[in-house]
Image (cartoon, rainbow, N blue to C red; front, side, top):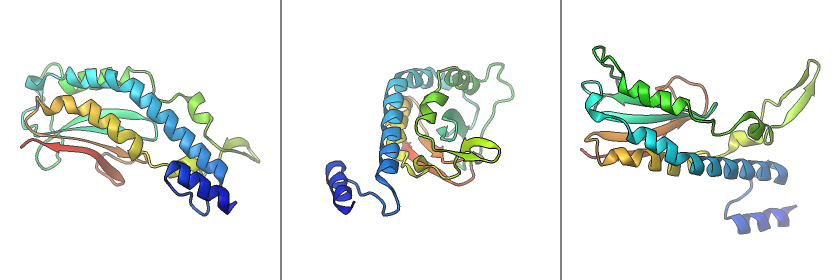
Length: 191
């Protein structure tokens, strides 16, 4: 088995963890490849939505635009913050421009449907029936490699138009926006 691990490492340029089976390694690689393919196909539509943002209708005090990607359900939201990462709102605006863009994003087809996800999930039989195993090989996937190019492409259009900071990040779980574990994967500051 050691020789096969070395061969895979030399072919793909990364090592397989000692506690990871080759089938788990293949599952993670397949999952990342599918996700990268789906992100590449979806990126132009997401970019068009973000590019349609009317910057003149942003809430007063907006110094920072941030795209947050929630990995657990592959949802995305665009947020406006002040310099101190406080979310800003405009109570007087009849049409919230950020909500319009977020509604467009929400209406797009999911990046991965349940059938896609099920191909990479390990199931186990329990007394109450079939259920997802608590530990999944894909839980160890480094999704920043998949999401960083996507986020960069989607948010770069704002960089030339918006005078403040433009960032994107993602959560590995369903935590609140400013709770850990948040990881920044795109960060450009024009100021």
